[in-house]
Amino acid sequence: MFENIPKIEKPEFYIDLGIRSAKKYAASIKLREKHRVRRQAELESIKAETFARSVKGNIEKICSAFPSINQLPIFYKELLDAMIGADALRINIARIAGIMKTIEELQQKANTRMKKANDLGEVQKIKSEFYGRSFSITKKAKDAFNFLENARKTIKGFPSIKTKMPTVCICGYPNVGKSTLLSRLTGSTPEIAPYAFTTKQLMVGYIENKIQVIDTPGTFTDNLKKMNWIEKQSYLAIKHLTRKIVFVFDISESCGFTIKQQEELFQQLSRRFRAKQFIIYLSKADLGLENKQEFIEAHKEHRIFDNADELKKVLMEV
Ligand SMILES: Nc1nc2c(ncn2[C@@H]2O[C@H](COP(=O)(O)OP(=O)(O)OP(=O)(O)O)[C@@H](O)[C@H]2O)c(=O)[nH]1
Ligand SMILES: [Mg+2]
Image 1 (tube, rainbow, N blue to C red):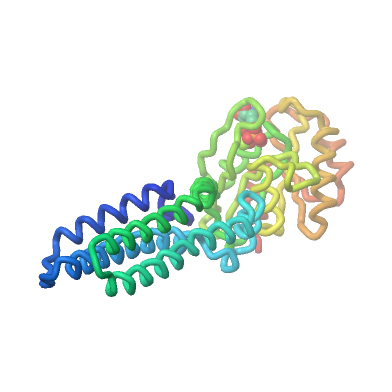
Image 2: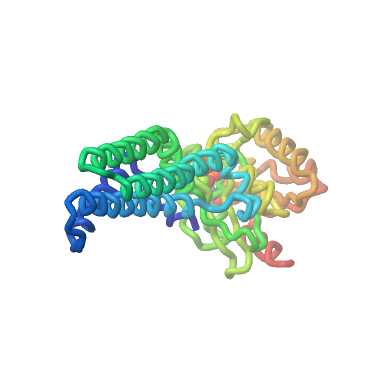
């Protein structure tokens, strides 16, 4: 979805490109003007215009490649705000867009002055002033170019999610078997390993191309700002994309976390997302689960599954 933003270079790169393209173009044209001063003035005007067009074109490409924040689905909008800062992105795009405008004005002024230049010294002076000021305002925006390059890298790592498809999120403590369940439900092949924090980005699968299932790891803090990058993504996916949450409990505790710890996360999410429907999945049923009956008694108000196929059937019921 966001892979098309071109790499953003340092300002010097665009200046060099502009100079090269001006030189190249100037070498390819034939001027009819015979008067030495007029001829030189005309040549420099053409070069300045080519330089300005090149810099403007490249900056324009950068500005228009970033997604327009207001048109993004709410999930991506908030993700972008949490990861990059929507205002900061707007400001930095506006800063480099400002360069285009200034260079255009400088070039027009230089052009008008060139037409009136009386000697080669004056032509040289106008030329130096034009490039000097153009370079300086472009280089001054170094931080903005840098910011946008970092933003591009962050955006490129955003998960590819269908924001309009009915979606189910799989939550639960680390190592309880969330990714294994995702794989059983959707046939996708996420990384599964016998240690906590295996999943480091949102994993997505589809049930018959009708239901999107997202593995949303994280134990979440109260504050979005304090969450790590994967937790922010998970949290926003739960908040904006899903009405159904499958909460995975490993009551065998072979995940390394007690039922009590898992219960705390379950209660915390239930409170925070009151309006959503929670379904419980007991993982690792093959391990016996002696305490299953006791657990079911304590969670009478929830539907509980320990078989992925049965859970899948229920998720398919619209
Ligand atoms: N015996 C048994 N082991 C399971 C089952 N499901 C998962 N496991 C094991 O539990 C471990 C963790 O499984 P994952 O699916 O990676 O768990 P996760 O919740 O995605 O873990 P994180 O990504 O670290 O949060 C792996 O060693 C799995 O093989 C199951 O049904 N039975
Ligand atoms: Mg996982």
